[in-house]
Length: 250
Image (cartoon, rainbow, N blue to C red; front, side):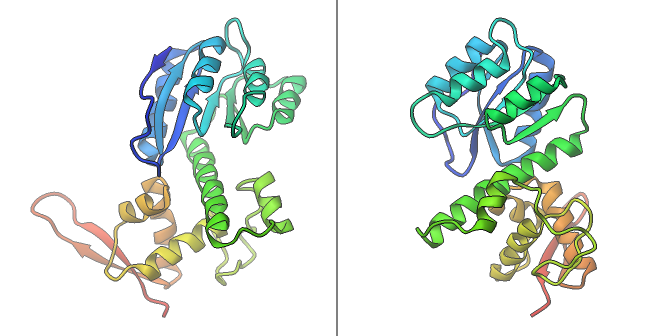
């Protein structure tokens, strides 16, 4: 078990525990989380018992959980975590387990996503983006109103990242989204551009919204192609020029 940090440095970061019996795989997942930019790794465990201990002591926001673990299985960790006092922890299952009973048990335990190994880096980054947007939606609602949730928000909470309009159907922005883009995230990127008083980079947008830089760039380039945003080049002393984006649609 590796205890990386017990106190969050930045409350904007999502405090995450990784639990996987394969140390190399745990390291890869840790690297993806850190590269994303919206996550802070507070602990890594290689057994179910150690993983549950980290969840109990550190009370993270998110757990990346393998199912096939020595001693205490991931399903047992999931059930035990649900019985802990305090706010429930969000859990994404990342596993090679494909058995129907295992998948149903994970769903009954309230996992946010169930990713079957092997999968591409794009799939993992999409799930991480969806989870970040899910948290942004919750914080946005809490900041705007204390009223009860409507059906649309409840549906989005129950199925984060799965209720975006299809690529062929224009969403509230009036744009037909490319495959893999979310209307909710696009709205957030648009709002960020509109608020900016000067041109901003993809890194600025990513940091502001808790997205991966590559994801922020996809949305910005989509807006440029749709003639809703423009690009200027910032030339430094060395290396490639940096792209800066600004809102142009009025």
